[in-house]
Image (tube, rainbow over all chains, first blue to last red; front, side, top):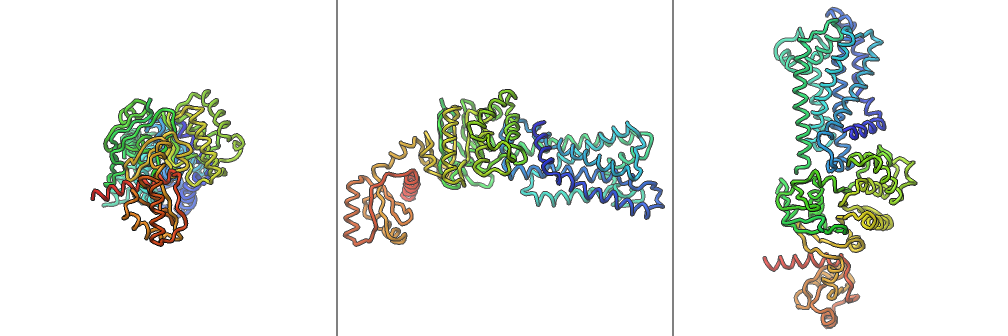
Length: 249
Length: 319
């Protein structure tokens, strides 16, 4: 697992554009969108819109980083190393974990960059060190779930073009049908139901509460953690099942 | 002892294509075994099964005395495969590629270090150590690919068309390397190839496949003897004339079967001396224009063509 992780990190180091590009769009959102929205949404009661959209942007950047865990499969398949690793005496769990952990690591690097940028916009974490620990956990489980899912999807698809199209078709609706950019309280009807059913809404809300609230509302956060642990187990099992199917033709 | 034993192996894909049809094979330990066949013969399907990548539809495969279906994890520790496409990681250096592979096979770091040094030396890779792997030529990449796969000191090394696309010199260097692997490391080598010369130069045993079936298996010498005394080549000024004459020659009953090769007719006869005289006489009597007629020492290509056409002839007769 560490071996696969090391190899993938080396690939990222050689291809820094694979870190920069997924970060670029969320950074633009954070800097430009929050600057505009800060002026236009003054009556909504949001005191620091950069801090408000930061959780949503964190999730967006995590999506971007995690999608690459699937993309690496296509690169490996085209250069032949996918086959070499599959016939090596290494457990399928280690192969998937190595790849997923690399996506999680990249997610954290990008999230740290986002936090550093948001410091210039007076963003602080009101809940302190414990809140930061909870945020790390929430981001970890989000990245774990998304990267396992991306890994599985990549094994179902024939090429990277279709993969990118499918991932965009999944990620953008999830992002916009969440509480990432606006407070969901004023929504009604079908949109409100869709936003509430979106599990990422609850991750974003939890992260937001940790940024804005001094006290940690465990009764709100723990069910979200529980839900995502179940989702992580499911998506990880799916990834291993699909990888095993690769050698069961 | 047998390195590989295959009994009644069948591989049928979900789309209904039968890639392997009742294949039986035996590969001895420590030998170079070549699997020859045209595209679609089933060579890659067979190698994919033997390297645990695909599951067979039915049949038994025993590798190093153990059943493949029940011991795939153990078998993976005993084999390595150099795939058709070069599989080195170009973002890693030569040394990093070797280290990565050694860790994949859980080779003790101390032992791995010694093996890496020995392989770099034996495969003459030391002068490339300081250059990025992406800048290597195809031949050097292939050499590194094979060296990497030797890091675990596999008992069986599979090579799927390792010299495809190589120039003559690189191919000869590769043959030298494979012989070195067999002689120095006592590794059983199982290779697939399109090149009959390659199989002839390298192999202890050869198997010829077509349409998922084994046409024949034996030593290079034995396969040559199969038709050696009774091959005649008649060369014509054009391929059209060769085709026209083949039809007539088939009817006169002097040949067992014939095949067109460029503008020549390659024919297998019952007795080469009698047939040589008779065909020559017949050609002159019929005023058929031809450039030459000769008794030939067949190459493996001739063996291959003869075998495939003899099977076709048999099939035709059964229809």
